[in-house]
Length: 313
Image 1 (cartoon, rainbow, N blue to C red):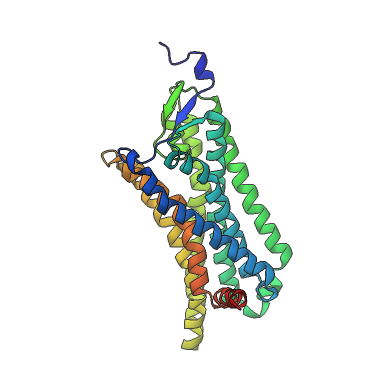
Image 2 (cartoon, rainbow, N blue to C red; image 1 turned 60 degrees about the horizontal axis):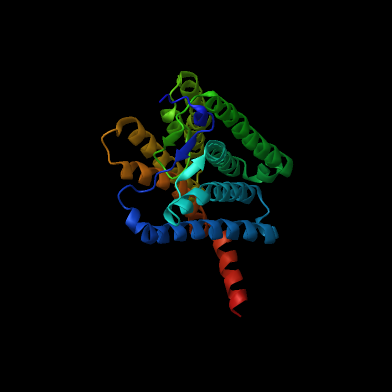
């Protein structure tokens, strides 16, 4: 039978959980549920604390709000298919639904990369021009940065979805992960994928590739500025303001690099490893960012503790 039968006009995809462990999905779903619950609760807490505390209405915390919103978006985008698999063993997803999920996963990932870059710029300005910090990063400037970040991500990913829509697929296609990713969808096509592959690579280079280079440059400039400070105490204080951000950058880029390396060179690696790395890439940053900023940022930590004490009494 030809793969281009009438049903191939409306292809369906089968998502993959942890192959061979289907009988244990109910147990596996417990830590996954806890990760999602902690991520969503943590990021909502960060947003509420910043929203309700006038003293936190500063550029640094506005960017942190953008990061929390992005993490919420990333978590809620992957949540439906994750739990449809691990709770209901429902693997099937329509092509259009898969494209929509893929679109938002990559949009939020690119936004997170850009927000981390904006936060590095924020730290550079705060350390280099402390007296002009608020004057440089006005509400208008921050709004413009936020709109530019969102606009770039939306514009970059849309053509990728359009190109995938034009390709031909089998009536039923098996994906490698519990959610839809561009590189995974491309592998299932039975027509030429050259243009889509090249465009996907260009998107990565123009977004996360460029952002990572600018992030490195930002920290070189930050380090140079810190080393020019005469007082050792002030140097340590300035570097301490960057610790939370450095942790967030490592939490985002380390799993992404690991997933890319396994996807490129791990043909002989167990499929479970691929799935686990993909889950780490998409689930760990939204989980860890609110924890890191709550623990390492005194202003956030103090406000959270204050709220808990108020509720207790």
